[in-house]
Length: 68
Image (cartoon, rainbow, N blue to C red; front, side, top):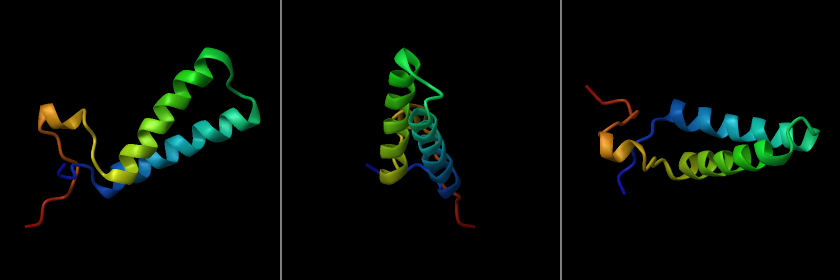
């Protein structure tokens, strides 16, 4: 697939995933909230690594800066 995520988008998602992991390890989140946020964190981490967000595709969204 063609990349559709810019650097800022990718870094923001990775940071949010790390924050969720830190909250879980610190014991701030648990139970259902921890599972849901954990799944979201994994998805964010995978999309930030690959640079492709499947949700953006049907809407034609791209956060990559266009060259002039």
